Length: 267
Image 1 (cartoon, helix red, strand yellow):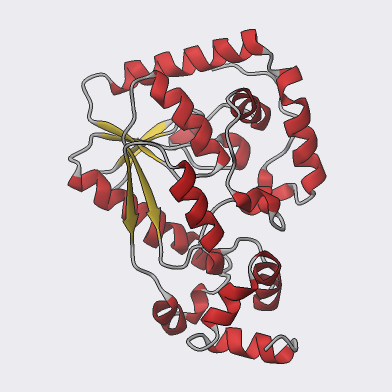
Image 2 (cartoon, rainbow, N blue to C red):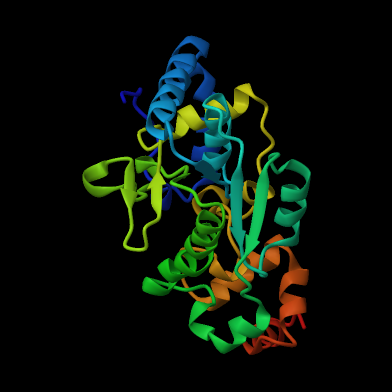
C-alpha cells in the first residue's frame, strides 16, 4: 500500500504536543477527500479479501488508531470488537468508553488491581521488559480469551509502522503467534496524518488521554503502565496532573503512592 509522506516520526520520539496538534490541524490538507477515500477504499478492500471465510473481530483500545480502524473495518462489514483492560484504568477513560464505545464491543478485564500491583512493584511505571509485559498480561491475554471464546480465526489491530509497532515478520501485516492467535494490522502503512484526517472527517471524539501530559506519546492504558516515565516519581507526578484521586485512592494499598504523597506534601 502506498501513502503520502508523514511529517511526524515515531510517537516515542515526539514528546512535544504542539507537533501533534500541528499534524492534526494540517491532516485534511495532506489528505483531501479524494486521496483519503482512495486509501480507505483500498484498505477496506484488502480487509475484505483477507477475512473472506474467516471469523473476524476488531481489537479496540479506544486509541486514535483503533478508532480509525473501527471506521475502515465497518466498511468491510466488521462490527464485533473487544476491549481488554485491567482494574487500574483512569476513571475518565472508562467514562469515555461508556459514552463512545462501538456497538458490538465486549469488555474483557484481566483483573489486575491495587492488591496485584502492591504484590508486583516492578510493574509500577515499568521500564524495559516489564513495560512490554503489561501488554502481554492485559492486552494480549484479554484478546486471547476473547479470540478463543468467540472461536475466531482473525483479530484486527490498529498497529502501524509509523508508531514502531510489530505487525508481522519483515513488516508484513499479518502473523500467528505461538499460541495460535492470528493478528492482522491493515493500517500498518498508514501515516499519522491519514489517521487524523479520517477521524477529523468523521468528527470522532477522541478519549481524554490525548489532552493529558505526553498524551499522544503515551496513548491509552492503565495508569500504572504509563510509558516512558523516567522514574516512579515522574510517573506519579503525571498521574497527579491527570487525576489526583487515583493516587489518593491507591495510597492505602500501595506503599509507593503513600510515600510519594508524604514526600511531596500532598498527603
